[in-house]
Length: 290
Image 1 (cartoon, rainbow, N blue to C red):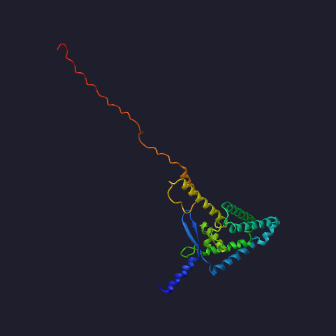
Image 2: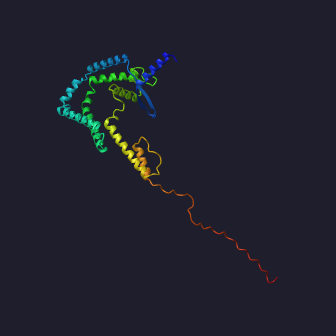
Image 3: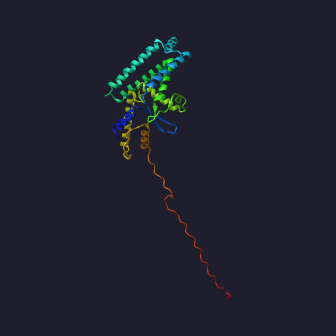
């Protein structure tokens, strides 16, 4: 292979390795792999044009801008001083609990770490609900509609197969695709990618990682106890323990083996009927006349 061929192969390999991958399961339980490639300059220019077009159309159609919507929310007291204070307090408390979880609980016991992780999870959910009071109405503003259009256009241009070919030929094909599950999943993945977030970022938050670690440790201890109490159970415990495997092991340990019933005739003396013997007929005696 020539140097030029090696350079081309290396360039293609570098491009493939820099793409972000995500998967989607179809109704037949088959896993398909898709990739997010970096947009070209033309893709970015056309996505910006899509933003401007939708923004202007939203203005003509009478949609509110973000500043106008915020004023409406304030006039209706959906966003008030009390709401702002509550929102700020939840943010401060969440930050404090996260800092404690990540810095001060290395030597703490499971119960203390679990309590802090649970508080962090609760505060994060409370913050999400507070933000939704504003984010919901804001999603229908001119800026949000235009940003959605830009994201959709980029999605139609940068989602690829493993070989680098585009999933959709153009924006119209994307909008009219009957595979809505793929379009929605792709758009969601592109939104996370644009914000610098991983696909599983919700599963890898500090509180979820801590709770998962504690749960794993408890399962391992439970399985060790089962193994000690039931040495007849052979085989090493699985590396990745889950709730189903724990329940299965506990059921095996709890159920006592019942004696199997033997088929056939029960034991015992069997009376055998003696065959009937026919009595021999007596020979007829001679008559006196003879």
